[in-house]
Image (cartoon, each protein chain N blue to C red):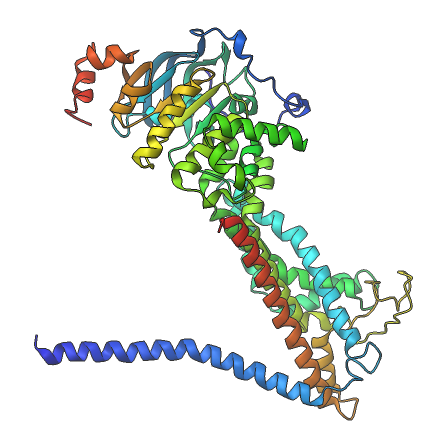
Amino acid sequence: MNDSHFAAKKRADNIMTVFFRFGAWSAVILLIAFVGYVMGEGCRYLTADMLSFTEKGLGNQFFNTLYLVFLSLVFSAIGGIPAGVYLAEYARKGHLVKWVRMAVETLSSLPSIVVGLFGYLVFIVMTHSEWNMLAGALTVSILMLPLLTSVTEDALRTLPESYRLSSYGLGASQWQTVLHVLLPAAFPRIMTGLIMAAGRGFGEAAALMFTAGMSTDIRWDDWNLGSPSCPLNPLRPSETLTLHIWALRTEALEVNANEQAAACSAILMILVVSFSLIARYMSYRIDKKMGGN
Amino acid sequence: MALTTTTYGYTKERSGEARPVSPDIAAVEPGSLTFEINHMDLFYGDHHALKDVSMDIRTHEITALIGPSGCGKSTFLKSLNRRNDLVENCRITGDIRFEGKDIFREVDLLALRTRVGMVFQQPTPFPKSIFENVAYGPRLQGISHKGELAGIVEQSLRQAACWDEMKDRLNQSALGLSGGQQQRLCIARTLAARPSVILMDEPTSALDPISTQKIEDLALELKEKYTIIIVTHNMQQAKRISDKTAFFLLGELIEFDDTVKMFTDPSNPKTEEYITGRFG
Protein backbone atom coordinates (compact mmCIF):
# COMPACT_ATOMS: atom_id res chain seq x y z
CA MET A 1 0.00 0.00 0.00
CA ASN A 2 1.48 3.29 -1.02
CA ASP A 3 0.38 6.89 -1.17
CA SER A 4 -1.21 6.57 -4.57
CA HIS A 5 -3.45 3.83 -3.20
CA PHE A 6 -4.85 6.21 -0.61
CA ALA A 7 -5.10 9.02 -3.14
CA ALA A 8 -7.19 6.78 -5.40
CA LYS A 9 -9.46 5.88 -2.53
CA LYS A 10 -9.92 9.51 -1.66
CA ARG A 11 -10.60 10.43 -5.27
CA ALA A 12 -13.27 7.74 -5.62
CA ASP A 13 -14.79 9.00 -2.39
CA ASN A 14 -14.96 12.56 -3.70
CA ILE A 15 -16.42 11.53 -7.03
CA MET A 16 -19.17 9.50 -5.39
CA THR A 17 -19.97 12.32 -2.97
CA VAL A 18 -20.45 14.69 -5.90
CA PHE A 19 -22.52 12.08 -7.69
CA PHE A 20 -24.91 11.58 -4.78
CA ARG A 21 -25.15 15.30 -4.15
CA PHE A 22 -26.01 15.82 -7.80
CA GLY A 23 -28.75 13.21 -7.53
CA ALA A 24 -30.26 14.91 -4.51
CA TRP A 25 -30.12 18.39 -5.94
CA SER A 26 -31.47 17.41 -9.33
CA ALA A 27 -34.76 16.44 -7.66
CA VAL A 28 -34.98 19.89 -6.10
CA ILE A 29 -33.97 21.66 -9.31
CA LEU A 30 -36.44 19.65 -11.38
CA LEU A 31 -39.25 20.52 -9.02
CA ILE A 32 -38.42 24.22 -8.98
CA ALA A 33 -38.06 24.32 -12.76
CA PHE A 34 -41.30 22.47 -13.23
CA VAL A 35 -43.34 24.53 -10.79
CA GLY A 36 -41.75 27.71 -12.16
CA TYR A 37 -42.62 26.81 -15.74
CA VAL A 38 -46.22 25.83 -15.00
CA MET A 39 -46.80 28.88 -12.82
CA GLY A 40 -45.14 31.23 -15.31
CA GLU A 41 -47.15 29.94 -18.25
CA GLY A 42 -50.36 29.80 -16.23
CA CYS A 43 -50.13 33.28 -14.78
CA ARG A 44 -49.39 34.75 -18.20
CA TYR A 45 -52.73 33.60 -19.53
CA LEU A 46 -54.74 33.94 -16.37
CA THR A 47 -57.58 36.42 -16.80
CA ALA A 48 -60.19 37.70 -14.41
CA ASP A 49 -62.79 35.74 -16.33
CA MET A 50 -61.02 32.49 -15.64
CA LEU A 51 -61.06 33.10 -11.90
CA SER A 52 -64.82 33.51 -11.83
CA PHE A 53 -67.28 30.90 -10.69
CA THR A 54 -69.16 30.91 -13.99
CA GLU A 55 -69.25 28.80 -17.10
CA LYS A 56 -66.28 30.69 -18.51
CA GLY A 57 -64.25 30.52 -15.35
CA LEU A 58 -62.40 27.73 -13.59
CA GLY A 59 -63.97 28.43 -10.23
CA ASN A 60 -66.55 25.69 -10.51
CA GLN A 61 -63.95 23.10 -11.43
CA PHE A 62 -61.85 24.33 -8.53
CA PHE A 63 -64.77 23.86 -6.17
CA ASN A 64 -65.57 20.42 -7.64
CA THR A 65 -61.98 19.32 -7.10
CA LEU A 66 -62.02 20.31 -3.43
CA TYR A 67 -65.44 18.81 -2.80
CA LEU A 68 -64.63 15.56 -4.57
CA VAL A 69 -61.32 15.12 -2.75
CA PHE A 70 -63.05 15.86 0.53
CA LEU A 71 -65.71 13.23 -0.12
CA SER A 72 -63.23 10.60 -1.23
CA LEU A 73 -61.05 11.27 1.84
CA VAL A 74 -64.09 10.70 4.03
CA PHE A 75 -64.94 7.42 2.28
CA SER A 76 -61.40 6.10 2.26
CA ALA A 77 -60.83 7.12 5.89
CA ILE A 78 -63.97 5.24 6.92
CA GLY A 79 -62.66 2.11 5.23
CA GLY A 80 -58.88 2.50 5.42
CA ILE A 81 -58.24 3.61 9.00
CA PRO A 82 -60.25 0.79 10.62
CA ALA A 83 -58.57 -1.69 8.27
CA GLY A 84 -55.16 -0.42 9.37
CA VAL A 85 -56.18 -0.59 13.05
CA TYR A 86 -57.37 -4.14 12.53
CA LEU A 87 -54.14 -5.25 10.87
CA ALA A 88 -51.94 -3.61 13.49
CA GLU A 89 -53.87 -4.26 16.69
CA TYR A 90 -56.48 -6.97 16.37
CA ALA A 91 -55.32 -9.43 13.73
CA ARG A 92 -53.47 -12.47 14.98
CA LYS A 93 -50.85 -13.95 12.72
CA GLY A 94 -52.50 -16.23 10.23
CA HIS A 95 -53.88 -16.73 6.80
CA LEU A 96 -56.61 -14.11 7.05
CA VAL A 97 -54.12 -11.34 7.70
CA LYS A 98 -51.95 -12.50 4.84
CA TRP A 99 -54.93 -12.29 2.52
CA VAL A 100 -56.00 -8.89 3.76
CA ARG A 101 -52.48 -7.54 3.37
CA MET A 102 -52.13 -9.01 -0.10
CA ALA A 103 -55.45 -7.49 -1.11
CA VAL A 104 -54.32 -4.10 0.15
CA GLU A 105 -51.02 -4.32 -1.72
CA THR A 106 -52.69 -5.41 -4.94
CA LEU A 107 -55.22 -2.65 -4.63
CA SER A 108 -52.46 -0.09 -4.33
CA SER A 109 -50.88 -1.11 -7.62
CA LEU A 110 -54.04 -1.10 -9.74
CA PRO A 111 -53.86 1.33 -12.66
CA SER A 112 -56.25 4.17 -12.08
CA ILE A 113 -57.84 3.83 -15.52
CA VAL A 114 -58.86 0.28 -14.62
CA VAL A 115 -60.27 1.43 -11.32
CA GLY A 116 -62.06 4.15 -13.26
CA LEU A 117 -63.69 1.59 -15.53
CA PHE A 118 -64.62 -0.48 -12.52
CA GLY A 119 -66.18 2.60 -10.93
CA TYR A 120 -68.05 3.30 -14.14
CA LEU A 121 -69.49 -0.23 -14.23
CA VAL A 122 -70.40 -0.39 -10.56
CA PHE A 123 -71.35 3.14 -9.62
CA ILE A 124 -72.80 4.36 -12.95
CA VAL A 125 -74.00 1.42 -15.05
CA MET A 126 -75.19 -0.83 -12.27
CA THR A 127 -76.97 1.98 -10.45
CA HIS A 128 -78.44 3.33 -13.71
CA SER A 129 -77.27 6.81 -12.93
CA GLU A 130 -75.70 9.70 -14.77
CA TRP A 131 -72.12 10.74 -14.26
CA ASN A 132 -71.88 12.15 -10.78
CA MET A 133 -69.49 13.33 -8.14
CA LEU A 134 -70.41 10.62 -5.64
CA ALA A 135 -69.40 7.93 -8.13
CA GLY A 136 -66.16 9.81 -8.76
CA ALA A 137 -65.43 10.18 -5.07
CA LEU A 138 -66.11 6.49 -4.40
CA THR A 139 -63.84 5.51 -7.27
CA VAL A 140 -61.01 7.74 -6.09
CA SER A 141 -61.46 6.43 -2.55
CA ILE A 142 -60.65 2.94 -3.88
CA LEU A 143 -57.29 4.34 -4.95
CA MET A 144 -56.72 6.03 -1.60
CA LEU A 145 -57.83 3.10 0.52
CA PRO A 146 -54.64 0.99 0.43
CA LEU A 147 -52.48 3.99 1.16
CA LEU A 148 -54.48 4.92 4.24
CA THR A 149 -54.62 1.33 5.41
CA SER A 150 -50.89 0.81 5.25
CA VAL A 151 -50.07 4.24 6.69
CA THR A 152 -52.40 3.61 9.65
CA GLU A 153 -50.99 0.13 10.19
CA ASP A 154 -47.39 1.36 10.08
CA ALA A 155 -48.17 4.31 12.31
CA LEU A 156 -49.62 2.03 15.00
CA ARG A 157 -46.89 -0.58 14.66
CA THR A 158 -44.11 1.92 15.23
CA LEU A 159 -45.61 3.05 18.55
CA PRO A 160 -43.71 1.76 21.57
CA GLU A 161 -45.16 -1.37 23.13
CA SER A 162 -45.08 0.45 26.46
CA TYR A 163 -48.12 2.53 25.47
CA ARG A 164 -50.18 -0.63 25.19
CA LEU A 165 -48.78 -2.25 28.34
CA SER A 166 -49.25 0.89 30.43
CA SER A 167 -52.78 1.36 29.21
CA TYR A 168 -53.74 -2.25 29.89
CA GLY A 169 -51.95 -1.97 33.22
CA LEU A 170 -54.30 0.85 34.18
CA GLY A 171 -57.32 -1.33 33.48
CA ALA A 172 -58.10 -0.12 29.96
CA SER A 173 -59.85 -2.37 27.48
CA GLN A 174 -58.35 -2.86 24.05
CA TRP A 175 -60.80 -0.44 22.47
CA GLN A 176 -60.07 2.22 25.09
CA THR A 177 -56.35 1.74 24.47
CA VAL A 178 -56.78 2.13 20.72
CA LEU A 179 -59.08 5.12 21.00
CA HIS A 180 -57.44 7.11 23.79
CA VAL A 181 -53.76 6.26 23.48
CA LEU A 182 -52.76 4.65 20.20
CA LEU A 183 -54.80 6.61 17.65
CA PRO A 184 -53.94 10.02 19.19
CA ALA A 185 -50.26 9.03 19.28
CA ALA A 186 -50.39 7.88 15.66
CA PHE A 187 -52.38 10.91 14.57
CA PRO A 188 -49.55 12.93 13.00
CA ARG A 189 -48.57 10.04 10.78
CA ILE A 190 -52.16 9.21 9.84
CA MET A 191 -52.55 12.90 9.02
CA THR A 192 -49.56 12.65 6.71
CA GLY A 193 -51.23 9.68 5.06
CA LEU A 194 -54.38 11.72 4.52
CA ILE A 195 -52.30 14.47 2.91
CA MET A 196 -50.67 11.99 0.57
CA ALA A 197 -54.06 10.51 -0.27
CA ALA A 198 -55.45 13.99 -0.92
CA GLY A 199 -52.51 14.69 -3.21
CA ARG A 200 -53.41 11.63 -5.19
CA GLY A 201 -57.03 12.77 -5.30
CA PHE A 202 -56.17 16.25 -6.57
CA GLY A 203 -54.15 14.82 -9.41
CA GLU A 204 -56.50 12.04 -10.41
CA ALA A 205 -57.99 12.20 -13.89
CA ALA A 206 -58.21 8.72 -15.38
CA ALA A 207 -60.40 7.34 -12.62
CA LEU A 208 -62.80 10.27 -12.95
CA MET A 209 -63.33 10.39 -16.69
CA PHE A 210 -66.07 7.80 -16.69
CA THR A 211 -67.41 8.48 -13.21
CA ALA A 212 -67.48 12.15 -12.28
CA GLY A 213 -68.18 13.26 -15.83
CA MET A 214 -66.68 15.90 -18.08
CA SER A 215 -69.13 18.69 -17.49
CA THR A 216 -70.21 20.90 -14.67
CA ASP A 217 -73.23 23.07 -14.31
CA ILE A 218 -73.41 24.85 -10.99
CA ARG A 219 -75.71 27.72 -10.12
CA TRP A 220 -74.50 29.47 -7.01
CA ASP A 221 -77.96 30.68 -6.05
CA ASP A 222 -79.38 27.19 -6.05
CA TRP A 223 -79.15 25.65 -2.57
CA ASN A 224 -81.80 22.98 -2.97
CA LEU A 225 -79.75 19.80 -2.39
CA GLY A 226 -81.99 17.80 -4.74
CA SER A 227 -81.44 20.11 -7.66
CA PRO A 228 -78.84 19.05 -10.27
CA SER A 229 -77.24 22.48 -10.26
CA CYS A 230 -76.87 22.86 -6.50
CA PRO A 231 -73.14 23.16 -5.68
CA LEU A 232 -73.39 20.80 -2.71
CA ASN A 233 -75.43 18.11 -4.47
CA PRO A 234 -73.00 15.20 -4.90
CA LEU A 235 -75.24 13.52 -7.45
CA ARG A 236 -74.49 15.97 -10.26
CA PRO A 237 -71.83 15.70 -12.96
CA SER A 238 -68.73 17.43 -11.67
CA GLU A 239 -65.73 18.09 -13.83
CA THR A 240 -62.56 18.65 -11.82
CA LEU A 241 -59.53 20.77 -12.72
CA THR A 242 -57.58 17.78 -14.04
CA LEU A 243 -60.50 16.64 -16.18
CA HIS A 244 -60.89 20.16 -17.45
CA ILE A 245 -57.24 20.30 -18.51
CA TRP A 246 -57.69 16.99 -20.28
CA ALA A 247 -60.88 18.15 -22.00
CA LEU A 248 -59.38 21.44 -23.10
CA ARG A 249 -56.29 19.86 -24.59
CA THR A 250 -58.00 16.97 -26.32
CA GLU A 251 -61.25 18.43 -27.51
CA ALA A 252 -60.09 21.98 -28.25
CA LEU A 253 -63.59 23.34 -28.26
CA GLU A 254 -62.39 26.83 -27.54
CA VAL A 255 -60.04 29.15 -29.36
CA ASN A 256 -57.78 29.77 -26.40
CA ALA A 257 -57.90 26.21 -25.09
CA ASN A 258 -54.12 26.03 -24.64
CA GLU A 259 -54.04 29.18 -22.59
CA GLN A 260 -56.94 28.07 -20.46
CA ALA A 261 -55.29 24.72 -19.86
CA ALA A 262 -52.09 26.45 -18.76
CA ALA A 263 -53.99 28.66 -16.37
CA CYS A 264 -55.90 25.68 -15.08
CA SER A 265 -52.65 23.81 -14.43
CA ALA A 266 -51.32 26.75 -12.47
CA ILE A 267 -54.40 26.83 -10.28
CA LEU A 268 -54.17 23.11 -9.67
CA MET A 269 -50.52 23.52 -8.78
CA ILE A 270 -51.23 26.29 -6.30
CA LEU A 271 -53.96 24.18 -4.76
CA VAL A 272 -51.76 21.11 -4.33
CA VAL A 273 -48.71 22.97 -3.06
CA SER A 274 -50.61 25.14 -0.60
CA PHE A 275 -52.60 22.19 0.68
CA SER A 276 -49.44 20.22 1.23
CA LEU A 277 -47.74 23.13 3.02
CA ILE A 278 -50.69 23.81 5.31
CA ALA A 279 -51.07 20.15 6.16
CA ARG A 280 -47.36 19.79 6.83
CA TYR A 281 -47.41 22.79 9.11
CA MET A 282 -50.41 21.40 11.02
CA SER A 283 -48.80 18.03 11.44
CA TYR A 284 -45.60 19.73 12.64
CA ARG A 285 -47.55 21.72 15.20
CA ILE A 286 -49.31 18.62 16.52
CA ASP A 287 -46.02 16.74 16.67
CA LYS A 288 -44.42 19.56 18.57
CA LYS A 289 -47.26 19.82 21.04
CA MET A 290 -47.11 16.12 21.79
CA GLY A 291 -43.32 15.95 21.81
CA GLY A 292 -43.14 18.35 24.71
CA ASN A 293 -40.80 20.98 23.30
CA MET B 1 -56.23 -26.00 36.66
CA ALA B 2 -56.61 -22.40 35.69
CA LEU B 3 -55.36 -21.51 32.28
CA THR B 4 -54.71 -18.12 30.81
CA THR B 5 -57.20 -16.74 28.41
CA THR B 6 -56.49 -14.29 25.67
CA THR B 7 -59.64 -12.27 25.99
CA TYR B 8 -59.55 -8.85 27.44
CA GLY B 9 -63.04 -7.75 26.53
CA TYR B 10 -65.04 -5.28 28.48
CA THR B 11 -67.58 -7.29 30.39
CA LYS B 12 -71.07 -5.99 30.91
CA GLU B 13 -71.09 -5.87 34.66
CA ARG B 14 -67.92 -3.83 34.54
CA SER B 15 -68.93 -1.25 31.94
CA GLY B 16 -72.05 -0.39 33.87
CA GLU B 17 -70.12 0.58 36.94
CA ALA B 18 -69.43 4.24 37.43
CA ARG B 19 -66.31 3.63 39.45
CA PRO B 20 -64.91 0.56 41.08
CA VAL B 21 -65.00 0.79 44.80
CA SER B 22 -61.67 2.13 45.93
CA PRO B 23 -59.96 -0.09 48.44
CA ASP B 24 -61.33 0.64 51.84
CA ILE B 25 -58.00 1.32 53.40
CA ALA B 26 -59.12 1.32 57.00
CA ALA B 27 -60.92 -1.99 56.59
CA VAL B 28 -57.87 -3.84 55.30
CA GLU B 29 -55.91 -5.10 58.22
CA PRO B 30 -52.17 -4.88 57.90
CA GLY B 31 -50.82 -8.37 57.72
CA SER B 32 -53.78 -9.82 55.87
CA LEU B 33 -53.06 -11.54 52.60
CA THR B 34 -53.21 -9.65 49.31
CA PHE B 35 -51.92 -12.43 47.11
CA GLU B 36 -51.86 -16.13 47.81
CA ILE B 37 -49.93 -18.14 45.26
CA ASN B 38 -50.05 -21.91 45.52
CA HIS B 39 -48.11 -24.36 43.37
CA MET B 40 -47.91 -22.09 40.40
CA ASP B 41 -46.21 -23.31 37.24
CA LEU B 42 -45.72 -21.20 34.15
CA PHE B 43 -44.75 -22.31 30.67
CA TYR B 44 -43.73 -20.29 27.63
CA GLY B 45 -44.42 -22.91 24.98
CA ASP B 46 -42.19 -25.79 26.11
CA HIS B 47 -40.06 -23.68 28.37
CA HIS B 48 -40.87 -24.26 32.04
CA ALA B 49 -40.27 -20.72 33.29
CA LEU B 50 -41.65 -20.93 36.83
CA LYS B 51 -41.60 -24.13 38.83
CA ASP B 52 -43.99 -24.84 41.66
CA VAL B 53 -43.92 -21.39 43.21
CA SER B 54 -45.89 -20.78 46.39
CA MET B 55 -45.85 -17.46 48.19
CA ASP B 56 -48.10 -15.31 50.34
CA ILE B 57 -47.90 -11.57 49.89
CA ARG B 58 -49.03 -9.53 52.82
CA THR B 59 -50.96 -6.31 52.72
CA HIS B 60 -49.05 -3.05 53.22
CA GLU B 61 -45.68 -4.65 52.96
CA ILE B 62 -42.98 -4.25 50.39
CA THR B 63 -42.00 -7.57 48.90
CA ALA B 64 -38.79 -7.60 46.87
CA LEU B 65 -38.15 -10.20 44.18
CA ILE B 66 -34.46 -10.77 43.54
CA GLY B 67 -32.40 -13.16 41.48
CA PRO B 68 -30.13 -13.23 38.43
CA SER B 69 -31.43 -12.35 34.93
CA GLY B 70 -33.78 -14.93 33.51
CA CYS B 71 -34.65 -16.42 36.89
CA GLY B 72 -38.35 -15.76 36.43
CA LYS B 73 -38.86 -12.87 38.86
CA SER B 74 -40.30 -10.52 36.24
CA THR B 75 -42.39 -13.32 34.78
CA PHE B 76 -43.79 -13.95 38.22
CA LEU B 77 -44.58 -10.26 38.69
CA LYS B 78 -46.31 -10.07 35.32
CA SER B 79 -48.55 -12.96 36.22
CA LEU B 80 -50.03 -11.11 39.16
CA ASN B 81 -51.93 -8.64 36.95
CA ARG B 82 -52.31 -11.18 34.15
CA ARG B 83 -49.99 -9.37 31.83
CA ASN B 84 -48.80 -12.75 30.61
CA ASP B 85 -52.19 -13.07 28.94
CA LEU B 86 -50.75 -10.85 26.24
CA VAL B 87 -47.93 -13.30 25.61
CA GLU B 88 -48.74 -15.98 23.08
CA ASN B 89 -48.14 -19.59 24.13
CA CYS B 90 -48.04 -18.70 27.79
CA ARG B 91 -49.72 -21.20 30.07
CA ILE B 92 -50.16 -20.96 33.82
CA THR B 93 -51.26 -23.72 36.17
CA GLY B 94 -51.77 -23.58 39.89
CA ASP B 95 -53.68 -21.18 42.02
CA ILE B 96 -53.24 -17.42 42.23
CA ARG B 97 -55.62 -15.61 44.52
CA PHE B 98 -56.03 -11.88 44.90
CA GLU B 99 -57.85 -10.95 48.11
CA GLY B 100 -59.06 -14.50 48.32
CA LYS B 101 -60.37 -14.74 44.77
CA ASP B 102 -58.97 -16.75 41.87
CA ILE B 103 -57.58 -14.14 39.46
CA PHE B 104 -58.37 -16.22 36.40
CA ARG B 105 -61.91 -17.21 37.24
CA GLU B 106 -63.35 -15.05 39.97
CA VAL B 107 -61.90 -11.62 39.24
CA ASP B 108 -62.72 -9.63 36.13
CA LEU B 109 -59.53 -8.96 34.16
CA LEU B 110 -60.07 -5.22 33.84
CA ALA B 111 -61.03 -4.93 37.50
CA LEU B 112 -57.85 -6.83 38.43
CA ARG B 113 -55.69 -4.52 36.35
CA THR B 114 -57.37 -1.52 37.95
CA ARG B 115 -56.73 -2.82 41.47
CA VAL B 116 -53.21 -4.01 40.72
CA GLY B 117 -51.23 -1.12 39.25
CA MET B 118 -47.94 -1.46 37.44
CA VAL B 119 -44.77 0.62 37.09
CA PHE B 120 -42.29 -0.44 34.44
CA GLN B 121 -38.53 -0.51 34.10
CA GLN B 122 -38.46 2.34 31.60
CA PRO B 123 -40.71 5.32 32.31
CA THR B 124 -43.70 4.93 30.02
CA PRO B 125 -45.61 8.21 29.88
CA PHE B 126 -48.19 8.58 27.14
CA PRO B 127 -47.57 11.31 24.57
CA LYS B 128 -50.12 13.48 26.33
CA SER B 129 -49.96 16.35 28.78
CA ILE B 130 -48.94 15.69 32.39
CA PHE B 131 -52.52 16.25 33.47
CA GLU B 132 -53.95 13.86 30.88
CA ASN B 133 -51.43 11.19 31.78
CA VAL B 134 -52.53 11.17 35.40
CA ALA B 135 -56.22 11.60 34.52
CA TYR B 136 -56.11 8.63 32.16
CA GLY B 137 -56.99 5.97 34.76
CA PRO B 138 -59.85 7.93 36.34
CA ARG B 139 -61.22 8.75 32.88
CA LEU B 140 -61.23 5.05 32.01
CA GLN B 141 -63.35 4.54 35.08
CA GLY B 142 -65.89 7.03 33.78
CA ILE B 143 -64.93 10.14 35.72
CA SER B 144 -65.32 13.16 33.45
CA HIS B 145 -66.11 15.97 35.87
CA LYS B 146 -63.32 18.51 35.55
CA GLY B 147 -63.12 19.47 39.19
CA GLU B 148 -63.10 15.89 40.34
CA LEU B 149 -60.38 14.98 37.84
CA ALA B 150 -58.30 17.97 38.87
CA GLY B 151 -58.61 16.87 42.50
CA ILE B 152 -57.49 13.33 41.74
CA VAL B 153 -54.59 14.58 39.60
CA GLU B 154 -53.36 16.90 42.34
CA GLN B 155 -53.70 14.27 45.03
CA SER B 156 -51.90 11.65 42.96
CA LEU B 157 -49.07 13.99 41.98
CA ARG B 158 -48.66 14.98 45.63
CA GLN B 159 -48.54 11.34 46.69
CA ALA B 160 -45.88 10.65 44.11
CA ALA B 161 -43.90 13.71 45.23
CA CYS B 162 -44.16 15.52 41.91
CA TRP B 163 -46.77 18.17 42.60
CA ASP B 164 -44.41 21.02 43.39
CA GLU B 165 -42.26 20.60 40.31
CA MET B 166 -45.15 19.86 37.95
CA LYS B 167 -48.07 21.99 39.12
CA ASP B 168 -47.17 24.88 36.82
CA ARG B 169 -46.74 22.74 33.74
CA LEU B 170 -49.70 20.39 33.92
CA ASN B 171 -50.67 21.15 30.34
CA GLN B 172 -47.22 20.51 28.93
CA SER B 173 -46.32 17.21 27.36
CA ALA B 174 -45.09 14.52 29.73
CA LEU B 175 -42.38 13.64 27.21
CA GLY B 176 -40.56 16.86 28.09
CA LEU B 177 -39.84 15.67 31.64
CA SER B 178 -36.57 14.09 32.74
CA GLY B 179 -36.38 10.32 33.16
CA GLY B 180 -36.73 10.46 36.95
CA GLN B 181 -39.66 12.84 36.73
CA GLN B 182 -41.29 10.65 34.11
CA GLN B 183 -40.98 7.63 36.37
CA ARG B 184 -42.57 9.46 39.29
CA LEU B 185 -45.28 10.70 36.94
CA CYS B 186 -45.94 7.08 35.98
CA ILE B 187 -46.27 6.23 39.66
CA ALA B 188 -48.73 9.12 40.05
CA ARG B 189 -50.62 7.83 37.02
CA THR B 190 -50.80 4.39 38.61
CA LEU B 191 -51.97 5.84 41.94
CA ALA B 192 -54.70 7.89 40.24
CA ALA B 193 -56.38 4.68 39.11
CA ARG B 194 -56.81 3.83 42.84
CA PRO B 195 -55.07 0.47 42.98
CA SER B 196 -54.47 -1.40 46.21
CA VAL B 197 -51.31 -3.07 44.95
CA ILE B 198 -48.44 -1.59 42.95
CA LEU B 199 -46.18 -3.87 40.97
CA MET B 200 -42.79 -2.35 40.19
CA ASP B 201 -40.58 -3.97 37.59
CA GLU B 202 -37.05 -2.68 38.24
CA PRO B 203 -38.40 0.86 38.49
CA THR B 204 -35.04 2.50 39.13
CA SER B 205 -32.72 0.61 36.83
CA ALA B 206 -32.93 3.32 34.15
CA LEU B 207 -32.51 6.19 36.61
CA ASP B 208 -29.66 8.16 38.17
CA PRO B 209 -28.87 7.74 41.89
CA ILE B 210 -30.76 10.86 43.00
CA SER B 211 -33.93 9.84 41.18
CA THR B 212 -33.49 6.33 42.51
CA GLN B 213 -33.33 7.70 46.04
CA LYS B 214 -36.56 9.63 45.45
CA ILE B 215 -38.38 6.57 44.15
CA GLU B 216 -37.18 4.48 47.10
CA ASP B 217 -38.34 7.11 49.59
CA LEU B 218 -41.63 7.20 47.74
CA ALA B 219 -42.02 3.43 47.94
CA LEU B 220 -41.50 3.55 51.70
CA GLU B 221 -44.14 6.25 52.03
CA LEU B 222 -46.63 4.48 49.77
CA LYS B 223 -46.31 1.31 51.79
CA GLU B 224 -48.56 2.87 54.40
CA LYS B 225 -51.47 2.64 52.00
CA TYR B 226 -50.48 0.19 49.32
CA THR B 227 -49.04 -3.25 48.96
CA ILE B 228 -45.88 -3.07 46.88
CA ILE B 229 -44.13 -5.84 45.02
CA ILE B 230 -40.85 -4.80 43.47
CA VAL B 231 -38.49 -6.64 41.16
CA THR B 232 -34.94 -5.45 41.55
CA HIS B 233 -31.46 -6.33 40.38
CA ASN B 234 -30.06 -4.26 43.14
CA MET B 235 -29.72 -6.23 46.35
CA GLN B 236 -28.92 -3.11 48.36
CA GLN B 237 -32.23 -1.71 47.22
CA ALA B 238 -34.08 -4.83 48.34
CA LYS B 239 -32.30 -4.60 51.67
CA ARG B 240 -33.07 -0.90 52.08
CA ILE B 241 -36.77 -0.87 51.37
CA SER B 242 -38.37 -4.29 51.53
CA ASP B 243 -40.02 -6.16 54.39
CA LYS B 244 -39.92 -9.53 52.66
CA THR B 245 -37.55 -10.81 50.04
CA ALA B 246 -38.03 -13.65 47.59
CA PHE B 247 -35.01 -15.15 45.87
CA PHE B 248 -35.60 -16.80 42.51
CA LEU B 249 -33.16 -19.00 40.63
CA LEU B 250 -33.80 -20.76 37.32
CA GLY B 251 -37.56 -20.53 37.74
CA GLU B 252 -37.62 -21.79 41.29
CA LEU B 253 -38.39 -19.86 44.42
CA ILE B 254 -35.33 -20.74 46.46
CA GLU B 255 -36.10 -18.77 49.58
CA PHE B 256 -38.76 -16.38 50.79
CA ASP B 257 -38.44 -14.75 54.18
CA ASP B 258 -38.17 -11.52 56.12
CA THR B 259 -35.61 -9.29 54.43
CA VAL B 260 -33.57 -8.91 57.59
CA LYS B 261 -33.35 -12.66 58.03
CA MET B 262 -32.55 -13.23 54.34
CA PHE B 263 -29.65 -10.82 54.36
CA THR B 264 -28.20 -11.79 57.73
CA ASP B 265 -28.94 -15.46 58.11
CA PRO B 266 -30.19 -17.06 54.90
CA SER B 267 -31.20 -20.67 55.32
CA ASN B 268 -30.32 -21.77 51.80
CA PRO B 269 -26.63 -21.75 50.79
CA LYS B 270 -27.55 -20.61 47.25
CA THR B 271 -29.21 -17.51 48.68
CA GLU B 272 -26.10 -16.75 50.63
CA GLU B 273 -23.92 -17.20 47.57
CA TYR B 274 -26.09 -14.85 45.56
CA ILE B 275 -26.46 -12.08 48.11
CA THR B 276 -22.75 -12.12 48.89
CA GLY B 277 -22.09 -11.66 45.18
CA ARG B 278 -20.53 -15.01 44.42
CA PHE B 279 -22.71 -15.36 41.31
CA GLY B 280 -25.40 -13.45 39.47
